[in-house]
Amino acid sequence: MIVENVKDGSITEIKADPSDGTFGIFVFIGFNPATEIYQGKLNLNEKGYIVTDENMKTNVGGVFAAGDIREKSLRQVITAAADGAVAAVQAGKYIEETFENV
Image (tube, rainbow, N blue to C red; front, side, top):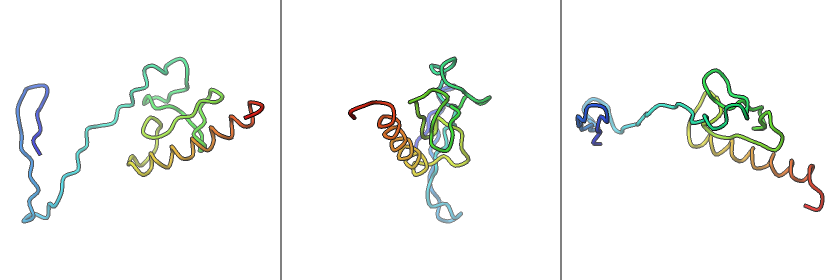
């Protein structure tokens, strides 16, 4: 993998090295939630993540948040997908319970 430092322009090549037990590379680029547009609209915690309950409900009726935008202990694609499934089911229930003829 070729990595460019966007601050100083330096280039670094990173290779997996089987001799030291390295067989792959996991890239971590950080996780600061991009939630600025929700400030003052949805409850955010001190780290900037959207606050939800276990059903992905926010403090605003009919608004659900899923994936890495909410605080959780494990941030992987599979957990984000699970959050999305829960949010979709809950959103469907909300629509059925809130609106007639749906």
